[in-house]
Amino acid sequence: MLIRNKLILRFTLLVVAIQLCLSAFVYYYSALSREQRYYHRLEAKAILVGSILIKRGNLAENKLRNFHRKDLLTMHDERISIYDQTGRVLYTTAPGSQSALDPVYFAVIKNNKPAHFRQGPLETAGILYQHKGQSYQIFVSGRDEFGNREFEKLRLILLVGNLGTLVLIILAGWYFVEQSLQPISRIVTEVEGITARNLSLRVHEGNRRDEIARLAITFNQMLSGLELAFESQKSFLSHASHELRTPLANLLGTLETSAAYDTDLAEAKQSINSAIEEIRHVIELTNGLLALAKADDTSFRRVPVRFDECVTQAINTCSTKHPQQSIRLDFGFLPESVEDMFMVRGNAQLLTTAVLNLLDNACKYSQAAVRVTLGYSTPQQLLLQIMDTGLGMSEEELRRIFEPLYRGQNGKNTPGYGLGLPITRKIIQLHAGQLLMESKPGEGTTATVRLPAAVEN
Image 1: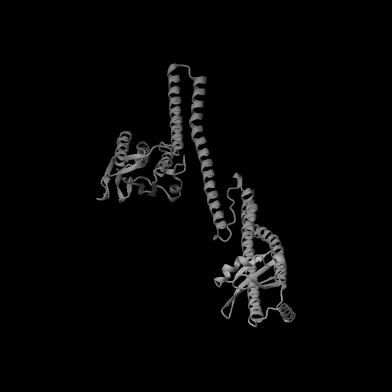
Image 2: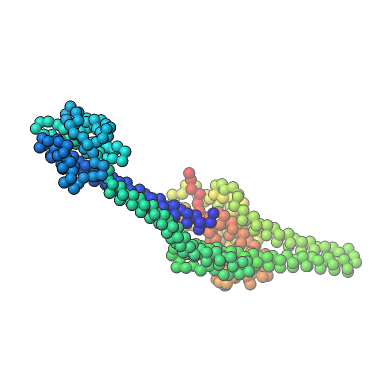
């Protein structure tokens, strides 16, 4: 079922339930009010009968008939019965068994509590009347013709009113739902027009305050991220195809030249060595691309790791790879409240790879010593800084250094494929950390890594 139909149905059911509760309330209290009003009238008539017939000591039927002719309060199907304290009928206008139920309520009346009961369409009120030490039970019955007619009109009004209100509720629900869902319908229409070819389009954000506007804002943010991902993918594919095409073209050219012109073993060996070198480049690039893909895997097991050991291992590996380069390790702020220093939760191999990539870049692009500082920014956060005094990068290059296969102008002549920093940032992000790069042309580059410290249970 569409949300529109669900909202209309729920709105209708809710309002109808409220309407029926209100109608039931009006019906119940109207019935109660009519009943109380009529019983009060019957009690008043019983008191009046007692004053005229008993107080004057004359229960003659002709007196009562004469009284009826002058009584303007006579009710439809009026019945009057008078009993003495022994239960003997002194006077009645009820035919036959009409007053048969009266004695049942003698006990109630003797407790000075009026008796109210119904006999078919007739309603009866019984009272205890005292005169000269004698007790009399007076029962007055009647049919509330006027009240019943008014009550029938009320029932008709409530029935017609509820049916008419139901129609109005459905129409009002449909109108308000249409008005409420109109912005969502507009968003759906706009979204249907956005494809992979026009990801730069955005959804109208309305007043930017209500829930629908927040939905549009969130969707636009998702589109921005999606557009960036598409652009990064296109850039990655472009660079990857270019980087792979060059060594493969060189390899193919070398082999074709060798097959066509190499006539002796020495020339063939030279061509084979060139082909092997190009294959190594292809393998190295392929391994880098696989490492970048694996860096997106979040399923690895996270265990307590000594981050200082990861840094030390990365320094040793980098010193072996760049023996001419000097790497100096210093320790920064060490909080006294931390018992087990440099503990993080994660994967030691991935963290070592991330630090090694940063050190490798610093050593490749700097002739002077590389400085490594390991410490804490707060007791809950580790801080690693790797600083070199190399060529540095411009602001434009800094904005793009995390794009896979991107290389700055200063690194065109340096071996590499532009995969180290993207891999490193993904590894740091997988460990809930942050990687920041600061650089100035001619002054060097500083890489800052922040990682959450492992909290002891």
